Image 1 (cartoon, rainbow, N blue to C red):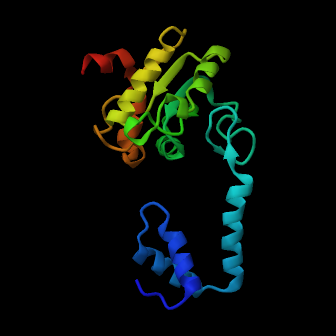
Image 2: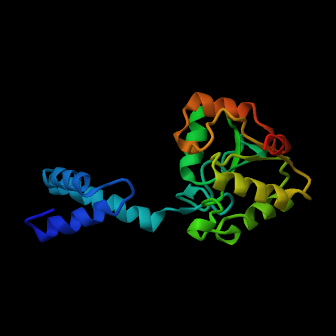
Image 3: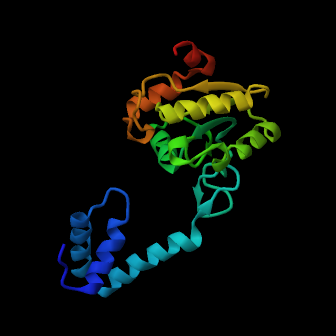
Length: 206
């Protein structure tokens, strides 16, 4: 791609480094920015800086937060005894959009994937075990995407928590096998949460 400006080219390279954005899309975004006034561009760059300076992880669940504890963990009306384990922020947002879950979350930060060099030690698993031991949690919902990596992580967590005094459940298969959880439609995802099953049942189906 022959771009006549070094500044333009540098910005295109930055945009195209983002997931799902190719060079043509990046160029279209940059050309759109050029048309905007300086005030808008300053606000845009300021928002980017704020992400790095002000956003962190919730000390309790690992969710993205503007403070030490996220808005979900800080809401007293949430059911403190039920924790839904998810891969990342996108899954929290997807489940919240169903308006069918009123407990808390625990964000692992990924799934076990030997092909990508991601093992249990790379995930937020020890903190989950610590929460089960220290908080009055009665149910853990394993809500990872129904892929090979998600199923492997679910089974690892099940074995890790097997000796704890907690019920372990999983989503019913309203979520298509192999699908990313955050891409599932709200109705199917909501039903899968409401109709969740004991994790042992999922082992019997395999």
